[in-house]
Length: 240
Image (cartoon, rainbow, N blue to C red; front, top):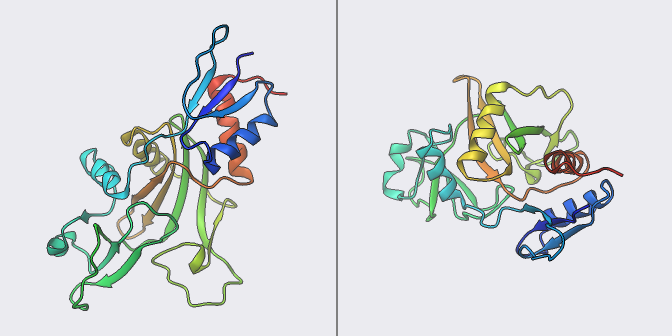
């Protein structure tokens, strides 16, 4: 059996390490993490490349716009905010961040000092927010962000992250084909082989919107098994 190599730089990636440990428990192949493909004299290794260059939020929105992937209106020019067509705007002070970090909310016409940011996006009201995991042009897992019942602080429903008392849930989540197709298209548009796609649903418009694609999502529990099984199927690895 050829060894299985997860090619990642840096090799300290938590995403890659979690996949490696999970695969070691399930397959007969040797599983290794390497910074670049190694050359073997006798055997050809099986290689899976963790996305080497993650596109930042500006690059993602630009790619979505070019390829007609449904996503919020955006601008990098603070003088053209009215063109977003939204009352509420998110100033994104960080273009490489997760879990809502770096977002500053403000309403146009109500705030004199507009935050300086490299990216501004229109806020779209949402009935639901999902994380759709895509691997090899297939949806392998769907989660919905829901309120934690024991969360006692004031909750901001516009930014649904753990700090605002939201958690990922799978129970009674029925994926919609339109949402799944959008997630697959978003990952393909960025040139990724896999990705965790954050999608919102606006009930009034009956429209889904992609917020971003995470190329190194946090893996735990069922999600780890989903990615591991997808790798085993993709590379036809022998199970223990």
